[in-house]
Length: 145
Image 1 (cartoon, helix red, strand yellow):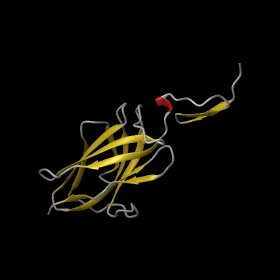
Image 2: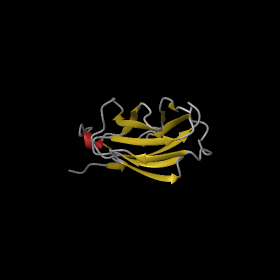
Image 3: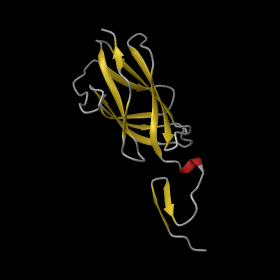
C-alpha cells in the first residue's frame, strides 16, 4: 500500500491516520518554574509540553534567550555579573555567552538551568517553541542586591 507523506521535524503529515505515539508530539508550550534564590543562584525548571498540554515524552531541542523585560523584546546583553549552567536535567550550549542558548531536554521533556548573578537585578528566560516558533517567557528571575 502506498501512502503519501512528508515530515517536518518529528511531525509527519500525510494521508494516513494521525498517530497518538508521544514520540511524534510537537513541542508547542512549556511550564517554567522559577525557584528561590540561594547564595546568588536561581534554578529555573522547564517542562516541555505538546499542543494538548501533555508533557513531551521525547528528547527535544529548542532555542532560548534572556531578556531584561517581561515581553522578551530587549535582549539582556550587558550583564557581566551573570552566568548560566545546566542543572541536573538536559543540556545547555551557550551560543552567545549568557544571552542565547541551544537547549536539549531529557527524554521526558525536562530541562533545568542554574543562573548565578552577584549584583541583583531581574532577567527573563524566553523559550522559542520548535513546533510553532511561539515565544514562552518565564516569570521574573529576580536576584537580591
